[in-house]
Image 1 (cartoon, one colour):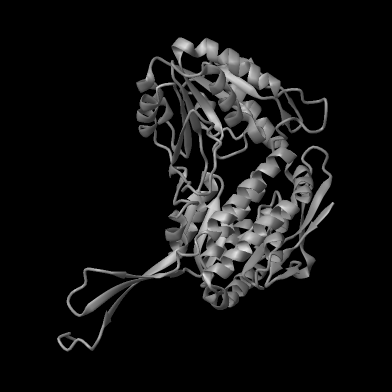
Image 2 (image 1 turned 90 degrees about the vertical axis):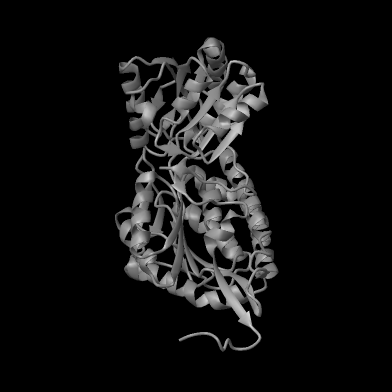
Length: 483
């Protein structure tokens, strides 16, 4: 069993009255982690600590902040074995997935460290005679980062890396499903040399999460909020932030489509689509939910995709299936409900669908159509639906027939045509001849429609986590100004 505490002002702390909540195994009921159950007073203390650390941290030379983030990237890899061990117990993730997480998190820290030149003054031409214009870029203040469980290392790091690099201090609110994972990630970054209070970690029991988050958003020192998670919770975060006039960045649910054109490399497309649909048991916001296939090649493509999916099957032989577990028995039951609804309405099972506790075989359903739950709802599991279409125009129509718009893919040999189709898809990221599960911290990433707004990654984060001030400068007072 693990024990997880909060971190406030650089010190590991328990909740008041030693309140704790338990993260239990969904199949056996065994207690996996006992974690500090913070209430609003402890959360507010974490925000106070961040506010106290802000003046000194924001005054550091950017290169000094960058050096600490680079040190954190190195320490993450040194802690890989421990992170894999914790993740396997708390969320059923495979070592392959966690090591992939760590690699992306390292790249995220290194990208953020490269933002050292972002906090600067810029003189702008164009002012009237005798007046100089300057644009002053500066840190926003305290940033609240809310991280999910499914990519625990990557997304916890992403919630804090750019804010820290740009001179902000941070309160990280961890997921109730992986409190030890998120505490460990925060502690690794602190061990890299972050001064006390620059990064604080808060955990809460599920029943207290709403109140704790609302108290943090309402705190006068908190100036920015970033959240990665479901659209349902994202709407709540946005409403809270709007009431307090706090700017927020939201990366929310997705329902990624992969379009397979008639001229696609079917074997390569099948491999990429299987990766996009089943990696980490499909529990990734950018996982492929729908495969939109030209009818002319559908049967041949499906035969290849089936081989790829069945190569990943074989649970029961060990406690750890190739792509891990789904997060809970409730999640497995929901996935079964999606499959059964689709089959009852005319879909055809190509392979998979069997479950054992929180293990589920990769599942492919053909002839998915409008009116089935699986057509509209985010799946978030190792299930994918195939929709057959007559041509590329119908494929684009189907791809856009969703409230979400996070990621998509197009497979085709004619790159010019594939690119033209990609430009018509309503999604924050579209990949040509590649998996929808694709992340590069050098690039801005986020969604449209109900998949959120704002962008992590690249230089887009500068706008998200800094303020800009317009300054005018005159050599002498303006005697012509009127009161």
